[in-house]
Image (cartoon, rainbow, N blue to C red; front, side, top):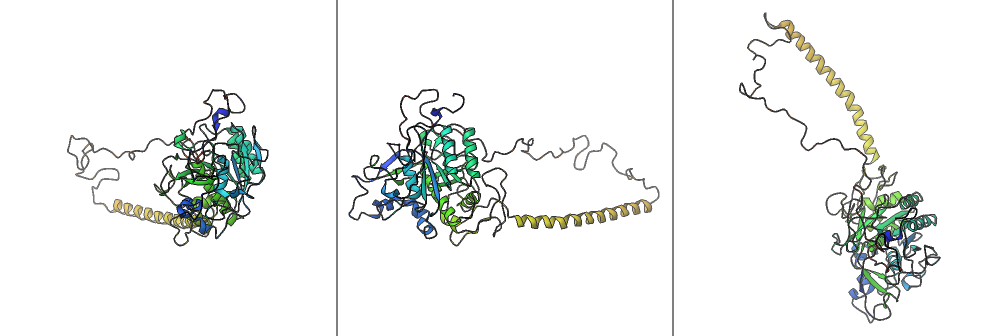
Length: 487
């Protein structure tokens, strides 16, 4: 790898394969009156599973801007008309305003934007998670490198993006430029979301940028609510969202009928970004740290209790995130050193009726104050009791010495008939060894050194790159596949 900018071969848009093109013909799915399951809306199974229609009675994301850092967004599609703001192109041969999708195979950026903010408008149109949010497209050239990603993140943050979606992935560790750019975006009060990665593309663990501290790293759920087999996992996983057979709008040069299905963590990340947009719209006074905290605390715990490698803190629950009472935090919950803040409940989110369990990740401050107050009372009382016991014991010993019978040995000498030194302890026969003494509890080793990594163990590599490391590119790489990575 050359010094300075990382090699372009190290990063790519890693996308899940386009598994199905819906219907046939040149337009949306054909009428007359197909069965519900054959409509575009009928194929959006995750909307009902996540109770999005109920969530839309509370908010549709109005006033929120979601940056989509990807291959660009085709702003001319009916499902996205009026939804796409002028953005930016980063790198070679991109549209200056980002409103052209240069992925001629999958239109990955357009698909992600559609999942987030499609307008809806009937059963033959795609309905986004946040249909009144606006999309800010940031188009990456093909190929692109980590410097381009960092530039795109910084630009989106400076442009006022409330949520930044990164449905892209690398097999490398995050570069210092990327880490600094994400921290810059967090400091600018943006919620940053990224796809974890797809096994079919060679990913073995959560890669960059999803592994960067502070990012919501999104793994994938199947239709049955369990972990989708193609989704990677790892200690960096934060939340899980649907990724199986997610329908999204596509230009007609990709799909003649204007729609396609993908199965990847890219789709899961886009869904998560849409949910984050709903929360930001419902609670406009919350900063990004508390938006993330609300998403984490109201997630439905799945798999082993607590945070785990497949689901992170659990499956995102949009309706719960919009309705539950959640204690505030004074620092970002995904960054080291974050602490819980006071709130109306005792540390965990308060579920509304039928919302299911919530995850508690910190203790309410006033609970801590009660504990400290109790300790302040108990410690002096314990000391007083100890002094009284010692004084009484001392007086009893003194009385025994003064009143002992004539010839009773002085203190420090054994009484008559006591076994001489060397006599075996109680329960052992003369000449046999004494019972072994208790050692330290089994399994305890030396105290570990070093502070904890905010996400646990370092991430494993993610999807491969084009061209292979060390090989010079001879032509632009084939466009990535949506669904998970573009991840």
